[in-house]
Amino acid sequence: MSNDNEDKKSISLPLAEGDDSSAEAPKSRDEGGDISSEIAKEVSDNRVVLYMKGNPAQPMCGFSARAAAILDAYGKPFYAVDILKDQEKRQGIKDFSNWPTIPQVYVGGEFVGGSDILMEMHENGELAPLIEEAFQE
Amino acid sequence: MIEPEIIVEKIREALPDAEVDVEDLTGTKDHYKARVVASQFEGESRVTRHRMIYEALSEEMKGPIHALTLEVYTPDEWEQ
Image (cartoon, rainbow over all chains, first blue to last red; front, side, top):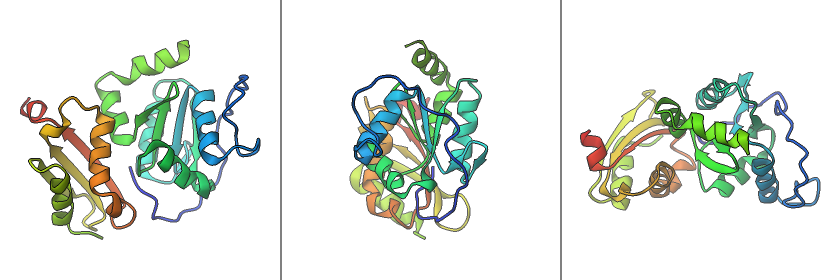
């Protein structure tokens, strides 16, 4: 996991779109919500969300690359948010999760952790049922 | 950049009886790995344990520490 005092540019959009389920709130910034509301919406609208530097095809940090590769191994779609493209979200996600580093992973709307915890749960088998469960809901 | 001793000191201020091992991963004093064995982790989730360490290093995480890989154990877990 790395913090944010590097200043790198990123290139592409998140790879997946959230589903359009009919949550009334929270709202994205486009809809008049604040950053924390937008993040709340992202993590509830998408079963697996990865906040990362760069995107899964072109990660801009080794820790983000590792997190994306782990999630990829489960063959389920995940919503990747490139925080390098969005300065407000770059800080907003740290405040939202009370977690100072990127990447960050949410599964089934719950904060799972950063790349160390993700790797540990991948290796000890805890991650598989968590992801399965998120996709059964 | 930050000296590893300072990282150890800060963590031990927050978790007084902790065993803390800090490794400079890149030789550049900004990418570190810390192994922390602390009785305060008893009954706490991994996320909470990491947050306890981040909190102890809150100022340092905003600048001098670019990356910090964490391994967190209770004394019992570490013995195993």
